[in-house]
Image 1: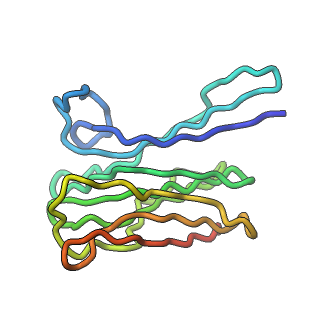
Image 2: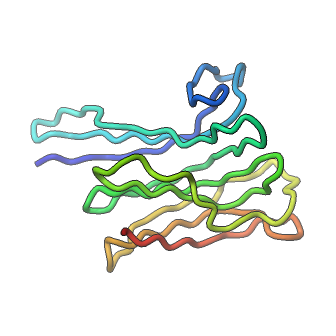
Image 3: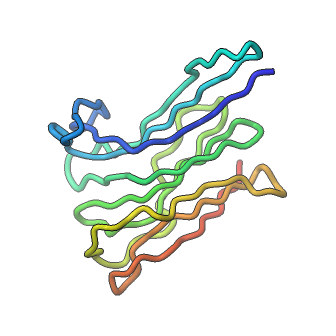
Length: 163
């Protein structure tokens, strides 16, 4: 029996091509993105790399930064990745990317709840959750933070149906 596991992580990137050349101090990092990895475990217990993808904004100006991801995979191996995002002209909002199991690379991130104000605190990222609906495996749910008007954080619930 072949089993798989998918994990998502934030990362610092340099320039517009999505290449990581920074280090733990943030040197050379000009934007942030999220990355996921999928591993397979074969019936003999051997774990192996299967695939990965990086979600980042390649814009030269007004770059969006993505962070605090959560991820889930349904029984068809479709993936939904939810995360926060912001930029110099965009308040912190709630985003997702959907990727079919064996299809082409996903579309650009979807902002399903835009931020409404500046956030003046150093604490962020307590709420990032993505799950498959327990009744219908073609429906995904993602719960992400955003900044509501007034500068306080809010929680956005997004429902994404597999197409």
